[in-house]
Length: 364
Image (cartoon, rainbow, N blue to C red; front, side, top):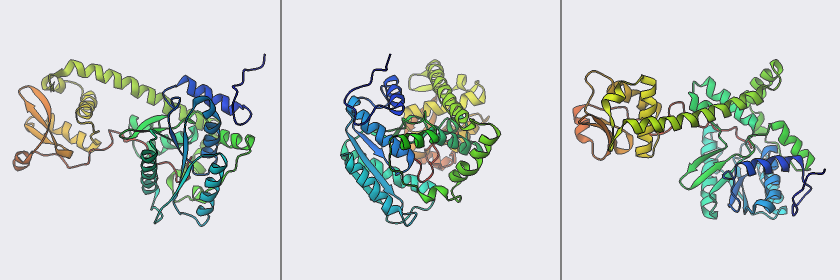
């Protein structure tokens, strides 16, 4: 029996359409039907495959689509790539915005901040709640290795998630994490898509490129399929993190007393568990993730024999002992500063182990 092929597609139904369509049907909250989507298109094979597949599947899922291309200006041909992406999008009948950096960003982190800032601004102007990128399982494997060599914890190793908050009201979605980079190239060839190669992806001054061009090929030579298994490990760690988060929430319900935590019961927990629960509780109460350095200093002072009564936190918050409870307050802590009971003024960002690592300049 022949498979049932959906009608109304803009090109013949392929195995790539089938895989992505099935993936999205299994995860309906990833790209909900009718949701306006802003696609980040670099012009490389991953983002061109993403653009083609979502454009074709829009007939089934009814997404309004728009495209943004961020030109870092890192190589002389970048303007030509931008023009090619704009022409290709126009041929598909999709609005495309080209943004060029006034000055080429210095380094991967700066390029990522600028690029996502452009995406956020455009998404808000268009009323898109979801920004979609073409990151693949290969990118996920690189990210895990990158976090591993920089000493990240489980949260960092599980990063490059399929879906994560980018900013208030905006969600970053990566629907191609089930595909390898070789598969997106095969998709582009099969669908006869144009691909613009970014020379910056070959620049070995960027650490992500060295992982891509040197480390992963070596691991594949030692054990074929290594990249896929590493990406699979990242997914398992993400699933584990979700399970642990649910257990943490249950544990906190047994420690909470009104608006605070039972200080005595919390203090008798093993240090690693006490740290995780305090981090989760502070994040839930403040809406911000306490950095690893701040958390470590909090644990040191709270578990010291002569613990301060109040501990100031970044962002105007302070942790206070009231009766036998730990309570999080927000307000003036000048009296705490005068007493000398303070923790380092490290910005509230990133949990223990960090978050996503910037993808390589032309990734996706």
